[in-house]
Amino acid sequence: MSQFNLDTCHIIDLPKITDSRGNLTFVEGGRHIPFDIKRTYYLYDVPGGAERGGHAHKGLHQLIIAISGAFDIVLDDGHRKQRYHLNRSYFGLYVCPMIWREMDNFSSGAVCLVLASNLYDEADYYRDYADFIAAASK
Image (cartoon, rainbow, N blue to C red; front, side):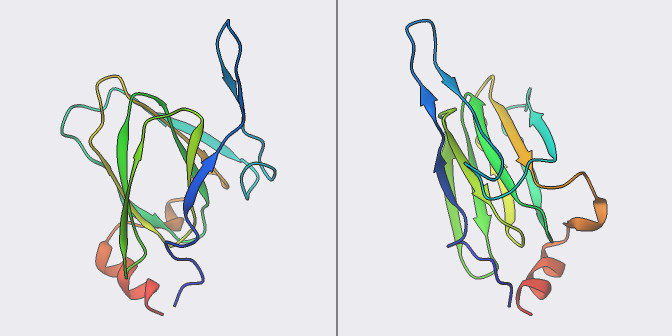
């Protein structure tokens, strides 16, 4: 059985510096999140009703932030599922390895920022749910 499960995933309250000219939030790898940041990407212009994700990672750690708008993430460790609603740019959802994720319910104009522990590697993905479940139960 995987060393990671839903109890490892959690919302991280990021620093928020409030100013009358606008707020500022920052993320420092290894300080605010439990990994060094090696890759950053973002999702935007997601059509209404579309779903993203539908995969798990073997070794990748991620922090997922709703920079603008809102969306939901359903996390699944092979035994339990939990839905998170992200709608604040100063909250990030830490997702550890071996967690299946599905993203939906994107609001108009939503922007999803993902900070990742490794560079892109197709070999790190489980894209078939049955393969993920078999690996997660070992």
